[in-house]
Amino acid sequence: MQCQHEKHQHEEGGDHGDAHQHHHGDANDHMLQTPIEELIQRFDNPERDEWQKPNDVMALLNVDSSQTWLDIGSGSGYFSFRLLNAGASVICGDVDDRFLGHIRQKRDSLGIPANKMKLRKLPYNAPNLKEKEADGVLIVDTYHHIEDRIKYFKLVKFGLKDDGKLVVIDFFKKETPVGPPVEMKMSEETVMDELKAAGFTNFEINDELLPYQYVIVARG
Image (cartoon, rainbow, N blue to C red):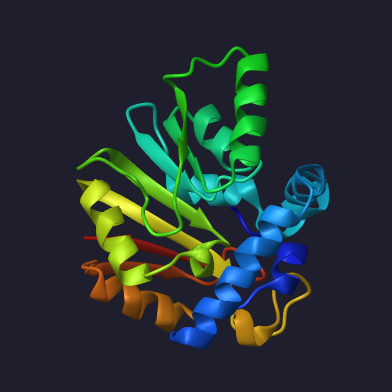
């Protein structure tokens, strides 16, 4: 489910209503019809590191070994394995069984215990978190894939511990060398408005860490 640069070219997001739902479905259908090998190659392309700056993102997340993180739209595991390497227990959440199979194969080949890196099939409309199950939830370039976002992120908040945090990373709503067309992007303001409606009350915005993306850290 994790959505990165080229993948965006067939997507629609940001607006509500029937038109959005139609394009939203088209985007998700396109994802499911694209060969998994092609998607994994895109996500794990070393050139992505230059603008995604995963080490800087991980420093911002401040992960430790006492924490459990859900990676929504875990895709190829680009951030899931980094969360694991930082010491966290990780729940890899995706709508696509092919991605979960890829992560399972990689996890098992590396000898990572299944209870340290869990796989969770997610529908488009629920994060499938138990109450206060996670210390952190990460969603990278996947926000606009979500259906009924306000309802969805109420469920995310339900699944976060009292001091837990949601981290949304997505593209600036302007022209960038990677990412979707501008009209498909969602602004920080739109994301925060929706998260406020979902019950989040405290926000930190970082629009300087990454060249093409903002980072929103939201707490209840």
